Image 1 (tube, rainbow, N blue to C red):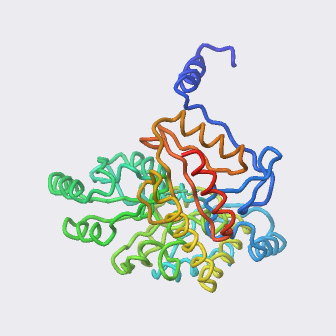
Image 2 (tube, rainbow, N blue to C red):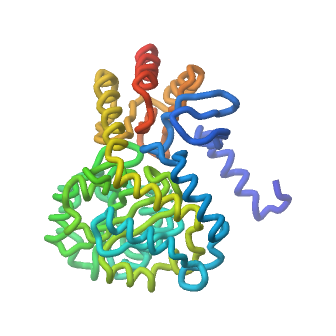
Length: 385
Ligand SMILES: *Cc1c(COP(=O)(O)O)cnc(C)c1O
């Protein structure tokens, strides 16, 4: 540690984290992504990935990325408004707008940056943000950065949301409701149509985060907005290229004027380097596959249905998605179960407080899991629970 008393607090803080059992370390995966991975030299069945459609190792994405590197090089070399804009960005933004059934879209260098930049552009000191208590970190941090008033409502609880709207809305200039559509640590989905009705009633804007829903939910893979068929009523749709789309980067889809506004006002888009050619091309290839191969999504949903039914007598959290969580009484039990599964050749992480309010094993499914692999997971879980 650095010999300077000004930094002593870091040592103290770290030891508090260790004592609470919250200390985190990375897991080193030494193989290409997929249903099977290699971790610490051992082959494991992978239930820990956001690569829902198995696209991160798809040859078409790999080739698109490779061609883009050969043609445009490795880096974008500047911000989009200076030297970092390529024809690939235009193509990707059109493809996203088409997938999301919006007029236009804007690609950020990550989903986290898309949320930070968009929320800070839309909301100021005189405004109110109402946020689901289980929202992703990027939505929470974005809200705080605005300097506006931020209030949480109970998870997916529209009565609580309406209560807060009726009490507080009038005291603020603008209001933005922010929510994940598919909640990443629970796997449940937000009651979007009713939430949009409430927003209309109280003249509030709505930003929906479709990070886990894109490519997964809806008949076209357009996300929960597509699933609930309300694209004409959800003006600000955020998502990421890094989950089902197997690449890196984030986006906002919306009206032409919204996107023009963000190009002029979103600091995390204006003052950061454009998405790399390889990531841009890979995401573009992925969207084409999402459009042309609905059978991948269908396979994913068959896997979800199989596992939901096979595990029905375990304490599952309510889920309508590829994310299935088994609730455990405390962090120690969750870690013990995860370690046991790993010993049996299964990678399914324990998720603990403070990330979530109660401990669980989180299983995320892929379209490329085979029935025998799912059955093996079921057998091993039932053997211990
Ligand atoms: C992963 C995630 C993000 C951030 O996306 P990145 O592209 O990984 O930065 C934002 N919101 C939600 C709900 C997410 O799950």
